[in-house]
Image 1 (cartoon, one colour):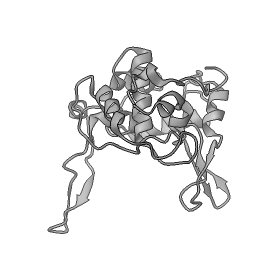
Image 2 (cartoon, one colour):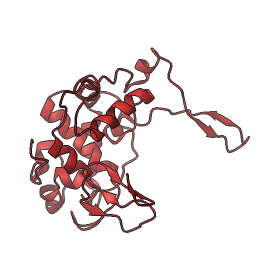
Image 3 (spheres, one colour):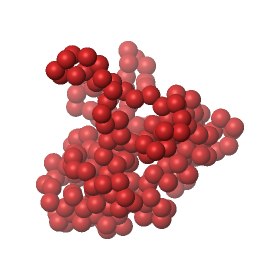
Image 4 (spheres, helix red, strand yellow):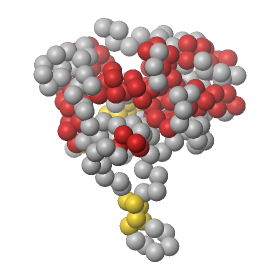
Length: 224
């Protein structure tokens, strides 16, 4: 939406096929609640739902039997499940799998050509694997699971890319929604809405709160 994200965009999230049995939660959660971590949904469901194109749908279905953390909009609680739900909404609206939407509708238009979302794609380039401390030996060893559950892909479990890709993504948000070539990717009003605090953090040492998607920080008087 040119004027920002509407509060009621996912009111009655049946659009996303959210099967939560709690009617108040099911009918009250909006895109805004998911973006600023105030939905009340369970934070994360660590269950592997495979890597087929129905993995997000299966992950959303797991929310049905989970109790809400709090009433929708009442509190801030960091919530991967809300991002999973938004990924499923994206699939329904664009009629394509999340990983395809990320590459075709975000990475490609911004020139982020090093972004990959699946292990076999990473094999084609020079991608580094992170390291973890081995509990037994104390040595640093390659992460045995560099790609986490695909069912959490829209919460950030699988995408990776180059520093250049990250800089181009961040640059677009710094330059009021414009790409490095100068074309408009997001409207200035949308970018402003994403960077405007909608909920305050109760713990000042962590961050100042959240906008729509962005975590907002105050580092020694500088807004980040």
